Length: 253
Image (cartoon, rainbow, N blue to C red; front, side, top):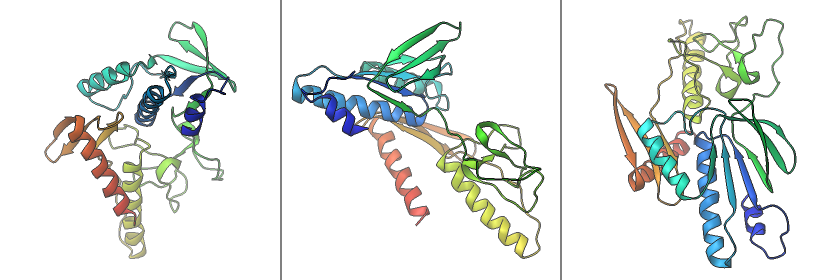
């Protein structure tokens, strides 16, 4: 990805210098801001125009899981980079050099790009087989509250393969934070089953989310016990983002 950005600032490059990112969730937003920052650095060094960046989101908002006020702050940062943001636009067709988007009225528009990146969600690999398996969205397998595949009480499915729901019916997000929770909970349930104890239902919880927006800029929030939530922006959020990565890395070693 960044190799293409570097090539786009070489005098010999002749292709489109537009870059398209599909999906404005955490991954897409972080990626497009990193690309925008790199584009600014190379533009300053070479004297060439910055790349034209497009961020396309099928839903009505960028960063839908982030608090509204933090989302507004992030949106201003994205706009400051000169990124074209298209919300409520679905990518309905894609080729090697362009995408076709459709807005809520059904109107379509083709956007050409030298590089196209998809970050708008995942689809589980088609690995599991079973006559009684119940499929969920994105090719996932539906599971019960204990993360067991429906129809197969001895089979646990976790992470991106699982279509799991909280006790209130809300879907469990496909994030590393929740995948880690599922793994730890299932490990404990396997120990319970081996000892003849009753397995326990899984209830997801969010420790918060942080989004890097290039350099030392970030936005996010920390969830604390007692339904308290602390919103952070700027360097403080950037430090918390790094701390969350370190904590995650240490937890899997």
